[in-house]
Image 1 (cartoon, rainbow, N blue to C red):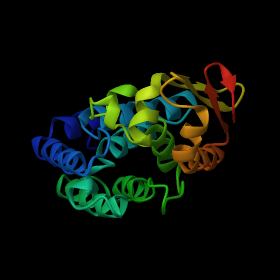
Image 2: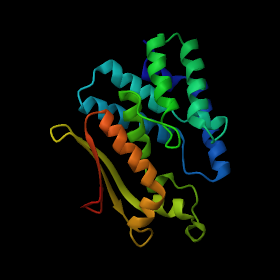
Image 3: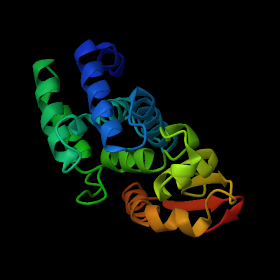
Image 4: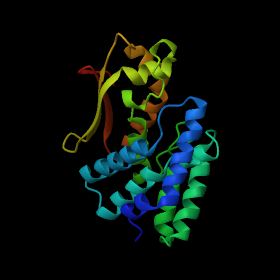
Length: 219
């Protein structure tokens, strides 16, 4: 089996991720660098581990999380599909078994809220891991006076934690938001689609998804 650590050490893959992030930086998007994809990989693995999935499935989730945004190298539009094609070529060339490639490619191709759906457990974990990565450090713009709503909302998040509660069959995203920077309504204005996708992904895993903002349960 091709392991997550092998994927992380691959210099070609790291180059694709870095160049994809450079493209998004030129377009004014938040950070999608190695920090984001590594966090997505580890959060997806944490979710599946906490819910009792086997080590092999957890490893596939890590790899899918790490590779999920490479399609931004091609174009932001339909990046999940182009990323899936790129991941297929990379993993096939590395000799990964077809059934594992199929699982990872399906997850990557379905992680975007415009077209994606949680087609398997790895896809579900990736969706939740990706969509819950909202934090101040992802904002590139350092001039608060020129922030758009996406900058303001991300910058307002002082703390973001994903917690799996297996006994309660729940996944909880807890946010601490500076409401002087952004209101709770601002958050929902730009992230409602993502939160809805997380709920559907949680359903695939047999749990419910909840959001707490400033210690108040809002969904």
